[in-house]
Image: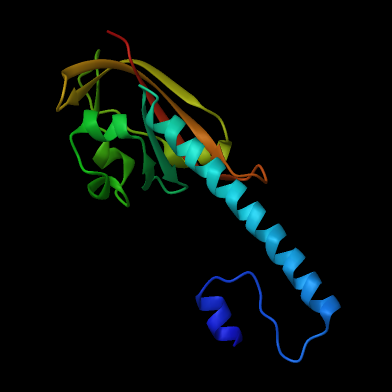
Length: 161
């Protein structure tokens, strides 16, 4: 019974024979968990909707610089499918050229993660499939979880032209 309950993601189970008091307690716990789960799903859905409607290019990485998330605007601008980006190094997905030197910009994700400080750069070029060559500024910031531990980095590219 327990195995079936865990595979079906149930909120609990009752073993017969049961006492009425235990049944009521199990129902209350299950209802409470269901309400929390629904609220968590709604919050996650809202966060995803908001992220998808931001006009900046947003790319999230893990602590080693591998892409874990990106918004729809990033997918469209970079001309890649989401599954082609996930799990790849940020440097492979987002290629920026320094306006002054012509060199490819390196994203110091490990430095941002270890030092927990943001890095900003201005006046870089991004080759966009949809818009051609764009001038952008970027901010690479530490990405922290609810416990304030740095778990990765978030790259935000803003178009400047």
